[in-house]
Image 1 (tube, rainbow, N blue to C red):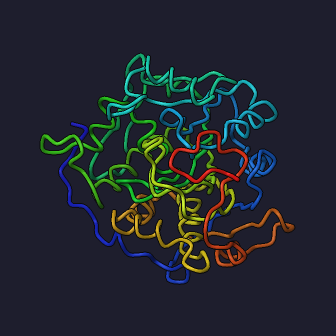
Image 2: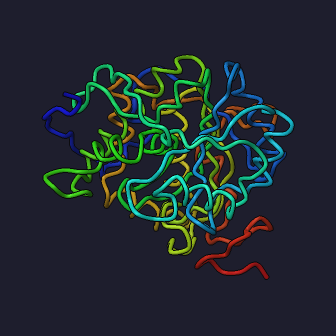
Length: 346
């Protein structure tokens, strides 16, 4: 049986400062350049291993979602660096504009993901992959097309999340590669309630699902987190997402999923003038920090890292140094195609 009985961990609402962590370090790259050029530049730092038939896992968003990664950025990255790759997605567990393959494809077109192939990986069924060392799962159900790919670039819009507290690379593949009817139900449903799993149990199940994907691609997976338009709401909420108030930060990348997600969280906690307050509240009230501690327990990466400032000669900096000049508040940029509930650019 895929699902097991277990006891969730604790302290998902407790942030561990960097100087209180122990263990090895990984490398995380950082740029403040929120543009197609910045995305291409940072991709070059994590492109080794992205070979063969390449999957680009990103959140294509609900129809007219205001905060998804700008399509022109991804189009330039695709045309110049990843020609021949395929954007991959799965259908949703909730009944929205991506619940069925037919509706999902319409939404993909509305949102402008029309410049390259898009594979809805579960449209023809599922495949189960082992979860090594998991306490909740022995295996996870994914879209069957996932095993058609040799490598995966996890391209993530980092933001808040209604249930997970935050959505980083872990959420992008832990939920986003699980198929819409079986895998996502294993993660979310409990005791006859489709959404009965929450707090630490949800974070752990999400991480175990992620581990199945990472283990499958082995050394052929890398991660980019875009810290822009960071609503406390996930892109699953589309036009209903809460207005953005957290300032934009930049783009981070790594070969280590824990390091890159933890670095993003560290930057949120480091924002001057209480700039991260709203997002921190969302993370802590959902016990979302258990995503990080459980990934470490599973051996999925390191929570310590060298933060490489690629804007300044690859100088090693801290999260505090990366965010020290950021002004509290948020202003939309020129790429806000769908404003949603956000304020409109003047």
